[in-house]
Length: 239
Image 1 (cartoon, one colour):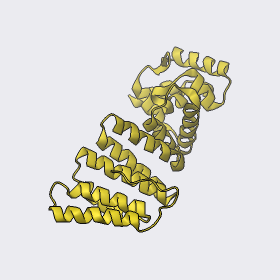
Image 2: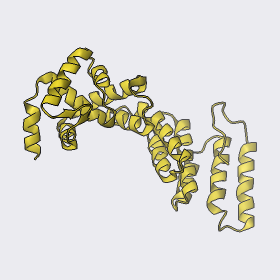
Image 3: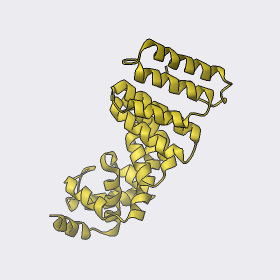
Image 4: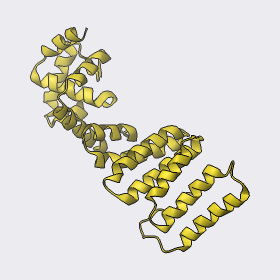
């Protein structure tokens, strides 16, 4: 089946083939205008290529006639071209190529494009969007990815993302929450960060610890706050 699809794609002209490749990278965000911006090609040239794609039954309007065609195009993309097209797609979509690009999709494109620094803020937005709709486990995954990316870029932002990850685990009742708290504690540097860890530790133990232990944790948080002034850009602890 894939060889038949490749044969069909192989009969396309170079402009039509490149337009199909761009559409495959875009997945559900395909419009002729977005493809034109991605390829930096004149719109009327892309329209002509699109008409060829429709005649070849590769596209039906602004969608692939069969998802296997898109999958074949993506599978055959050289890695360097995949990265280039993914970054181009992310830039166009972020610039208004669609109404409201999904943060998770934007993060996916920037990661596929090899630009983790651009992906990280979108991962945070994806986590926040998931939490707003009660999808806490999904949010935890996005925040964990953001924390991993920020580890190499900014320790403060890495802690903030790890804190959001830990909070999402707590909200979902995930048994991994206590381990996440201890990992968070290893990153805490400022008084506010240590206080945030104490808050998360309290949440982790409040259902099973005895009152003396809970008071100890609460006092640890208060001592952390009293131990000094946090840096101006430090985030407040989550309560």
